[in-house]
Image 1: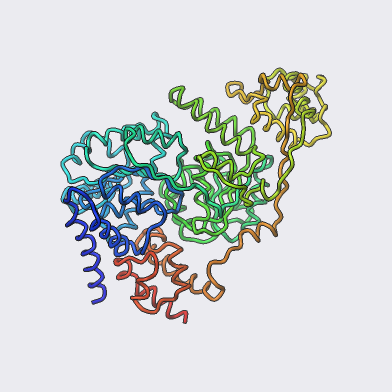
Image 2: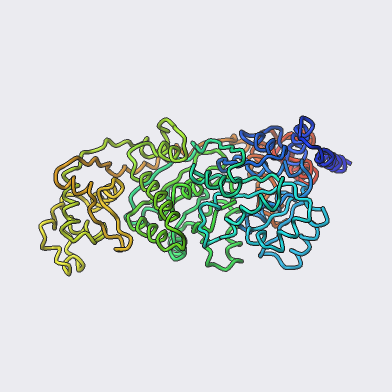
Length: 627
């Protein structure tokens, strides 16, 4: 009886929305309907910042670009309006795994959602299309390559399409036209579906990217909702790369027993790092696009459902991953831009608890990234923009200011020093290193302005290896002129000379450095160079203290574990990610509130009508058994 009542309430909420969808304007009754859907379907009493404004725009038929931080509830911004407006909502999503997870979560909430993609059998795709064409589907997910075919577009124009959604909209600007040209082709949607509002959503877009999305998709005609980018619970740190395996192992030894992500630039490095960690007693899995799909899916599922696993991956892993208890993101190699960095570190600490983002930065990474840009099949304007973005990341790495100030400033926000980055926690006064800089510049000049940082460092330090000897550089005045400094210091100083514009890193010359006008002026005694010494390593005690934030009492930890166990069983049975059953925040609230009846369980945030009917008694049984 109870389940039937819940089902009737759910149907009434959605049916109420559909009765109002034909009106010329969406006024107060539609706003009431929005709240009913939010509660009855998704189980939430109120809106997070930015959500209501985005929903109101779409419900009223206005297009909107929404930029919200990871974990702020972007999906609800279009899922609720989709149910309120009725008809069919078409969602463009870049990854099969991402759309499958969202479809699974919607179905568990009682929403008629489907996907058409290459991972499904043809018969499944045909069946999904028939349901959409028959008016049975509320949200239909597709990749841009599937959507932007003349046959699909023509077929969709015959249906009752009420809303178009472009998820992860930054891909429009940041993925090269040669890589996924269909993303740029999405600009046709506004002409093919006149009068249909379009929602573009992303967590990662600087001002240039936002302007690019607005121009390409909306022809400049859309509302813009941009929330703050700050994730204050994530500690930011960058250190020079020297022995990456030892540095990685040292970091992970301080983070045992928790889940984390390690990003690497190449597939080879990914497999090497995962194997290295396993050999050192750390549970690690690899993930990259070159792996067999079945193994990729298996590793991803293990990471999502099992505790204390390290996922070592390329950027192929992460978009749409909704694991709330990732405690760190470690970059073995530098990402391609501050946008990519922000998006990747955003996978840590989604539960609001303390997390850490640590990056290793070396000149070899910078050279590889610049080579990737030059080798991309794109026009000069895009390459120029990508070089500028990479330059901004280098500036972040070499900054003597609070890292959060630099990061947020890039996205157009101002902030006070955060007190939660390596610069703030281990401040170093800038040192006038003009003399050392001149030694380095002179070494670059005397070696012919065509060698990389490693070779120049060997010359300065007085290392007589085969390469130095063959070039005759052990006989030039610069050889051993800087023997009193460690190699790490010289590498850091050279990086900062590059970042400061005193040296130019030549991609075509395989990373060779040459003097700029600014560098030649310094070499001649004009101006000065201020150097930021590499930061000291944080102590184990300080890191443990920073990462210890309790959200449940000791008495509740056992119950929380039991609730997670039940969730894992239900997820495996239904072959869906664990968060699609209930997110961690909902389980934490269950452990804290300990509901004893279905009515009390319904008050837990994240418990909608469908999930209440399907899962309520199962979770209540676990709560009651805990006493």
